[in-house]
Length: 218
Image (cartoon, rainbow, N blue to C red; front, side):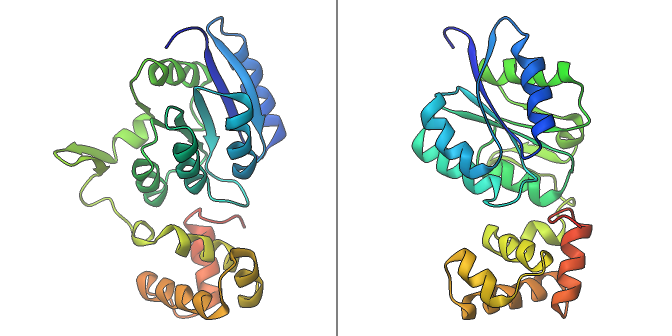
């Protein structure tokens, strides 16, 4: 990669964005070219700021970060994504691998590790926190969750997780349909699939599961 590494930092917490940007910007070979407060802003920002790497929080309201990564890949396939999260869930890891993220760091990592990850990814490599590496395996079909680690949540589709998060937020079926631009009947179908896959029998338990699994905020 010629010239300085160009970074965009995406996190819904203003303080986290500011602290990360301040620390990373101190490095002589890294420039913070932009920040964003959610995944929708990240998609717009990638065209405006022209980053090489996006450091993106997973746990943000609104558009799911993994869907944003897919959209960014279609707009700018050369941009590399490193995910950052306070949580370590099988579904998160599985989705990160599916969108071909070049890194996954937990927020327990020191700033020095974040910088090391940025440099490794910029040089063409990948960087995963040790906790993540312990849950993945490299085989003939690429990188995947290690056998025996997959949870019920890892069986959910992105759309099902989106519906689950809205249910956990207390939104009605009609409200979810309006936000997702789908019919109430389709919301019902997703809800039914969620209950079947998670072995849960009502919306209240679905909401509790989403919070326990870290897929929604309490």
